[in-house]
Structures are given as structure tokens and as C-alpha cells.
Length: 209
Image (cartoon, rainbow, N blue to C red; front, side):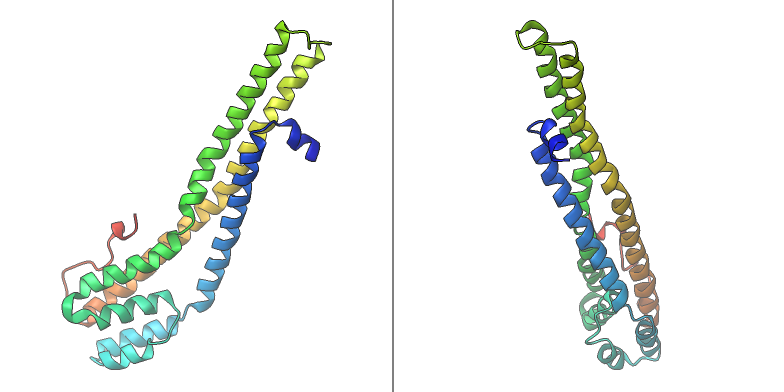
């Protein structure tokens, strides 16, 4: 494996860095998703909505005061600042929570695009070197050219492997982001109705760019 890596040329080192960044980001994001699922308290969300519907806003705030559920945090922050503007408070709270789910996706998106391009660059430079042997004194056998091209293709294969490995968790994490957005939208809309402040959608799609 080390020999194959070294045969790929200098471009293999930035590709190795890309693979490390991809793996670290995927592991951190998967840990984040598992942790957030473990912190979910759907029964507490229902209790807060029920108290808000009954007009017991203070009780709803107290119930969700120390919760680590991201939906509960959005609801309590929106209720705490409802005097100024419920909708703006809910949008701000939702944006903060959704940014936590969005973190790391830019890195994966970049690696999916960058890795194949780096691999292609490594292959092109390797082929330039291999074909350059045709006019020099270094060509000892016909296999020198084909061997050089085979080594040049290692970089492309490595880059594609990184991109293929990253695209599956990238799509999965995007689906979890959309799920969180939907959950917040649904809970915040219900809370808005219970508090008797109709007319404005409290979680906009552009809350997280």
C-alpha cells in the first residue's frame, strides 16, 4: 500500500490530507447526529405546546429551561423573546440550531469536488512525465511508458475513492439537516398558533445558507 501511494506521485500528499479531513468530518458529524438524537425529548415538546395552548407560558418556559433538545431550545427562546417579535425570535433561534446541523457539510462538499480534480491533476502530470521519456535516454523498454501511465492513474483512482466515500455521508447529513428544519418548523408553527400570533411563518428556508 505504501509503495502504491508513493508511486502515485507528489499529488498523493494533498489527497491524503483530503482523505483525513473527510474522515474526521464524517466521524464528527455522525457523532453529532447520534448525540442529538439521544437528547431528543418529544414528550417535553408536547408538554411545552400543551402549556402554551393553556396560556401557561411561564410554566412552558420553566419546563424547557434546562433541556438539551434542539427543538425545545428553539421554542423556549422564541417564547422568552416573544414580546419583541415572536417570529424574529423563532427565526433567530432556529438559525442557530440549524447552523449546528449544517457545520461540516461545506468541508465534505469541497472534498467531493476537490479530490477528483487533484487526482486528475496528478494523472496528467504523471502522463506528461511518462510520455516525456519517449524523447529521452531513460526509455529502456516498452513497458516504461505503460508502467508510467499505470502509476499516473493511481492519483485519479485515489481522488475518486475519496469523493465516492464522502458523497454518501454528505447526502445522509443533508437529509438530517432537512429533518431538523422540518421538526423545528412544525413545532414552532404549532407554538405560534397556541400563542395567538398568526400570519407569519416562523422558520424560513433561508435561515441557514
